[in-house]
Image (cartoon, rainbow, N blue to C red):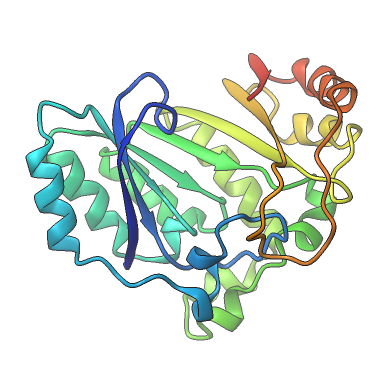
Length: 243
């Protein structure tokens, strides 16, 4: 586990709580519209922050912050994220985990530990388009990683994580960042089907940035396209909204 950054106060990352966010570097996906290449690409990695420095910061914020959001990159790329979750929980904070859903075994282990309070999983695309959008780089990053992650296809991993989250009893949300040409409003019928019955689903529109991971000319959805996407998914989930 390598800590790349700390946002000391956030009112938006953890729903309903004043929180801090810790950014872990490294990711097995290469989504072109990602605006945090410094957390994804090894050649752009930020310096590592000592974990003890992070824990000292949290100890100084006991009674002031209510929660901690663990994000990335992809936090579950690291097996040691499990101990990070437990340590944060032991300090008395609620813990939110962001994940891309490609490590269901590690996710299941952390869920069973009982230290998570909220899970947010990105649904990158309809399953039929997942490889194109996510551009999974898992074998390239660590050829020695658990063979389960390599032998299962990406769609199977994503579906496993969705099922784990929905049956966990933990508060959760699914969310999709939309960016043309990768996404179209019609995609949200298929997305709705794979998360049918979910508590919450949010559509997040692409925001232009000078520091995108990919070199494709991405465009945000128009308001009309956002509304159509929302309409397409709303019948499958309890709450759907544009964020």
